[in-house]
Amino acid sequence: MSGQDQAKQGSPAVGFSMTPAQEWRDRLARPLAQTVLPFFRRYPYRGPCSLFHLNLRGAFSPTDRFFYNRIPKAANTTISKLLAKHSDYQRPWGSRGDKGRMLRPAHMSRAQVEALASGEVFRFLIVRDPYARVLSAYQDKFLRKRRQVDRYGAMMESAPGEVPSFAAFCRFLDRGGVWRDAHWAPQSALMLLPLDAYDLIGRVETLDQDMATLVQRIWGIAPEPVEFAGTRTGASKAVEQAYDDESRAIVARLYRDDFELFSYQA
Image 1 (cartoon, one colour):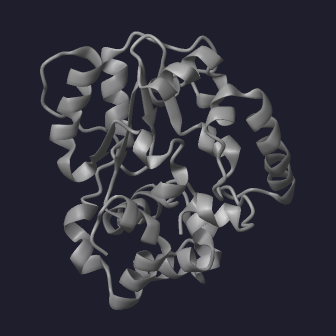
Image 2: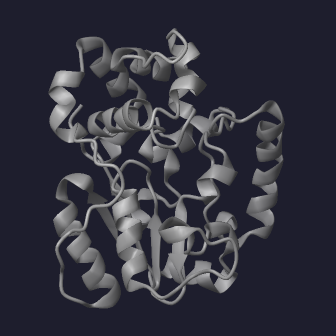
């Protein structure tokens, strides 16, 4: 069952670490957004994530005519850097580096949304094998930067300052932690468009080929060597060693939609 299907059956918007006040604000914002914002009027979001957080996942360039649905821990930094390298567009307010310079969905005009819907805009996202993506999020946020250890360590029954094991992290996800951060939330719940609306659903596993497709489709230029950016955790090669039977079963169940929608092997 997809995130949008869950919402149709009454699941609340849970967001990422939202306070009760923020959850209430999100509930009020949804019908308003679907009434006054052209993007969410055309593409109403019925999934379990906060609309405010989901809006950050869209990157539209009105000059280059592309729409990138940004998925954390799926080459997001690398792709954002590539787009910024070739595009001169920068939104006139609130821009922050490569990831913040494009237009958010909530800021798109009616004409821009109509162009998006009609196929005049190149629409794409990059996804990743859920096993590798979850492990990469753990390695990046708990082992390398450790920014989440103090925040969520107690929820994993870790001593203060102690780094929880990957197995403990998976059990934390199973107790509702899967919705605590976009870096490990299901990719299917972060989709801004229907699956069949994307012109390209690329994969981290075929990133060289997919990045070549991007630059050719958007700018009509020849492929170039991939310039990896962000934190490289090596998770894809470490999956077999990191997962035990319990962890694998948890991820297979929590990310079932990702496995099915993007044709990964659970």
